[in-house]
Length: 116
Image (cartoon, rainbow, N blue to C red):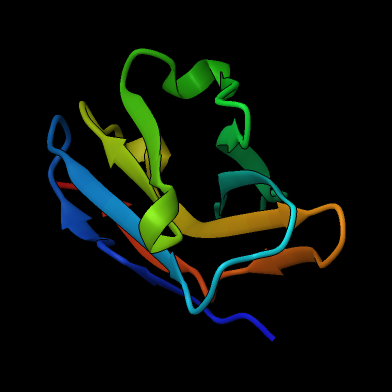
């Protein structure tokens, strides 16, 4: 099994920044993609950003230009730098690592609250 440990969430004012981290307990065989999802109260979980093993990056339209996903393959870690945060970014953020062989792993979730 693989444990994904997330950190970096918290309370921030509108316009502020946070950096989320997600570290896997070991390397994942045939890792295909790493990504961040979020789920706000009463809403479905949605993709925020993803990065494939080949370096292809995708962002949700709502976060383009504000969020940046990056990874450290040596440390089995994926990051999400979030700038210019808005109240509508408030959600529980989950990291996801996907493999052709091992399937999908999810983090436990970290709360991000954007409020005055």
